[in-house]
Image (cartoon, rainbow, N blue to C red):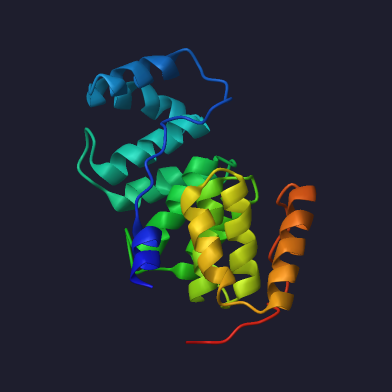
Length: 210
């Protein structure tokens, strides 16, 4: 359990800016400045873009405020920018927003809200979010404890390249009955067919409180 908690509390390093997004001319200038540790220039380039609704710039500002890069560390401002990007479907922002709520950065821990944002990223195939959502189902934090859905999300995360998820999935399998394991594997296959949308929203097939 300690190892799982450590895994869940681990801050995942993510690349600044989501791949495949179209950037304005000023975004690369900010990225080049950031990579050169010129945080003042990065902030100057990204802030107007973020205020205009650019999700990548919003995410990057959230990242900088959360980590105190070029600005005093400010969780409330980080949450603001992450949320704006997350609401536009930015998976990095959704995951990091979930992580901040899980850790209680900017307030008390809020596992239910953390699970909400993890799920939104998980439904876009984001492996780390699927991994953390698996842990939430295993622990019963923010969701009802359910080994079937814990295994399902861990299995999906593993298939998307998370080595930690494969290890977690196998640990969960040791706690399950053959029928539970069969159902979890079936749900994972169905979830892939649905492109991860609407997975794990049903009433748990098996759960109990600690």
